[in-house]
Amino acid sequence: LISVVIPTRGAKKSRRGKPLIIECVDSLATQNLGNSKLEILVVFDTDSKIGYLNKLKRFESDSVTIKFISYDPPFNFSKKCNLGGKEATGEVLIFLNDDTYWRTEDSLVELAGTSMIHGVGAVGAKLFFENNRLQHAGYILRNNFVGHAYFRDLDGFGPFGDLAITHEVVGVTGACFAQRKNVWTSTGGWDEVLPAAYNDVDYCFRIRDLGFSILQCNAA
Image: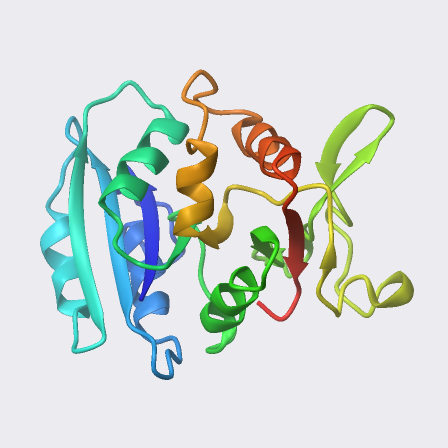
């Protein structure tokens, strides 16, 4: 069982005029799951219009279930992730932004499977902007600052296959972040003192401090 936690306000910012979360869940529900099952946990804000929640139920099937978890603002990404993590029952946890859309149908199982490798504490995917420029291919340390590798570059093979193969990185973005549920439990989860920026960087450093590796999975 793969649990995907999606914090959302139900904002309408997609090119099709739909709430972002609907397109996000639509692309999740059409992933090739193989023998796995999918549990989607939507952590929604109670002070926003929630009519979109009913529309999400249509994506349920024999292999996909959807749960709704209410959250009272103010905004705190870390707290919303932890709320979803506590309710998740899957062996694998994936934290996912609602403005994401899966480009290939095997991405979810690639990400989840990589997170199951012994000694791995977190796994990230390759993310793109809508213009096909790279948004994220792992975090790097440069000039005492943590940033996205190959930010706004074109996709390709990369130096030594850096954009093609799975490899170790300093950290990965919370926009698409996979790990085993027992790793999340052992770390204590996301630090709620950091509501927006750098909560994923802090989390990755704490995961590495426990002796786990963090991988960039470019097949996802």
